[in-house]
Amino acid sequence: MLLRITVFVMMSLGLLGFGTVAWLSMQPPAPVESKEGAPPPVVQEAILVAGRDLLAGSLLKPDDIGTLAVPRDKIPEGASLDTSANRHFLTGAMIRRRVVAGETLLPRDLLRQGDHGFLAAVLSAGMRAATIGVDAITGSAGLIWPGDRVDVLLTHELADPNRPASRRVAAETVLANVRVIAIDQQLVQGAAPGTNDGKSATTVTLELTGPQAERLSVASRLGRLSLVVRAARTSEDEAKIAGGPSSTGTNAPGGTTMADPATTGSGITWAGDVSPALTVDAPVLKTLPSVIRVWRGVGEGQEYKF
Image (tube, rainbow, N blue to C red; front, top):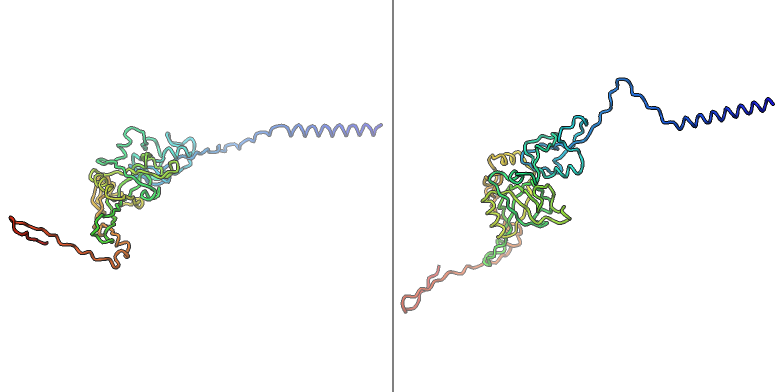
C-alpha cells in the first residue's frame, strides 16, 4: 500500500513539473532593461550630396551625385534621401551656385527642366541654341551627355575633277569647345543618347554665339559633321568659361571658340595626309590654257592665251 502511494506521488510531481516547464516556454521573453545612463542608438539616413566640386551652371550627371549618412534628426530641410528615384530626379538639374564636394544638394541650389526661366538660365548671356543631326557614329556612339564640351568636325569631299585624289577629301575643325545642352528631346536631362527606348540620338543641341550658329549652318551644307568629345574640364577651361583668355582659337562668349590654324597645325587634314597611297604615282594633271578669240570688224579673229 505504501509503495503505491509513493509511486502515485512521484508521478504527480513529474506531471506538475512538466506542465510548469511547458507553460514557461509559451510565455514571451521579458524585455531586456537597458543599462542605466546608456544613450539610445543613433538612427542614420543616407542623403544625396555633391560627389565633387561643381561650378555654377554645371549640369548634374550621375557621377556628380554622392551620398552621406547623417543622423535622422539632423537631416537638412529639403535634402533628398538616397533613392534611385531621387537620383534620377536630380540628374540633369543645373547648379545655381558653386557647390563643394560633400555639400547637400538642396532644391534652392538647383534648377530643373520645366522650372520658370530654366532654358534662359541654361544658356549663357548672348548665346543661342543650335541643333545638328547626328547618328551613332557622328554622335560619338551615344557617349555624349548634356553638359559635355565638344569640337565640331567637318568632313567634306570637293567636287573638282581637276584636283588630285589626295586633295579631294578634307576634314577640319569648324568649332571648338562648345557646350552640349540637349540630346534629342531630352533638354539637359543628363541622359546619354541610346538610353531612350534603345534608339541612338538623332539630334544634338549646342550652345553657340550668333556667328558660330551661322558657321555651323554653313558647315552642315558643306559635308558631314561629327562631334569630338573633349577631355574633362581643366582649370584652363574653367578660366575660359569664366570669361578668361582662350589659348585655343578665337574667343567667344561662354568659353566657346572657333578653330584656330595656329594651334591646330594647318587647320585642314587632306586625304593625302591620311593615306600616302593617294599620292604615290599620282598623275600630273595638265592645266589647259585659257583662250580668248577677238574679232575686229570682219577680219580674221586673233587668239589670246593666258
